[in-house]
Image 1 (spheres, helix red, strand yellow):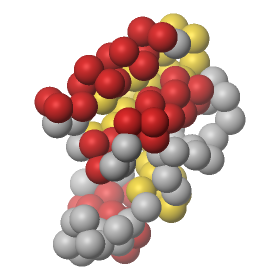
Image 2 (cartoon, one colour):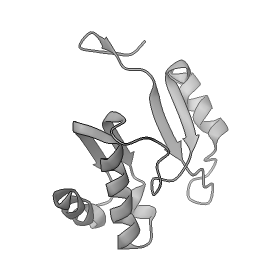
Image 3 (cartoon, rainbow, N blue to C red):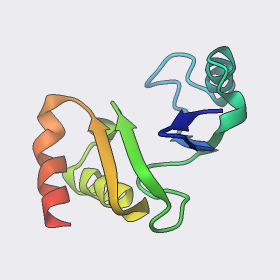
Image 4 (cartoon, helix red, strand yellow):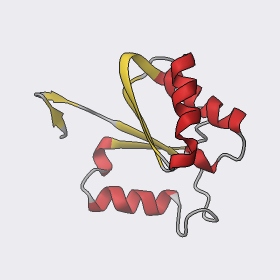
Length: 115
């Protein structure tokens, strides 16, 4: 079980479009293998989905993260849409953590400020 300050955090949800053209061997099976190897399989729920239309209700999470993904969207409008989706599923007072390439950071920052 995963604990933070004495509270369990279960489950962890993940999404991916599983595009093997972008990342070699990117597949649900490979992800499940990685989760198993880290002893996290029992604590994870994996969805095949796009961050442009997250399959979660509003205000679902205290923490929403994106790691080296949103820059793959080819236009500014859809990058902004992805940020708005992250904000939509994050609870008031929650955190959004985005790790991405430097060239896109100002788009993310400006979109979050507008929200």
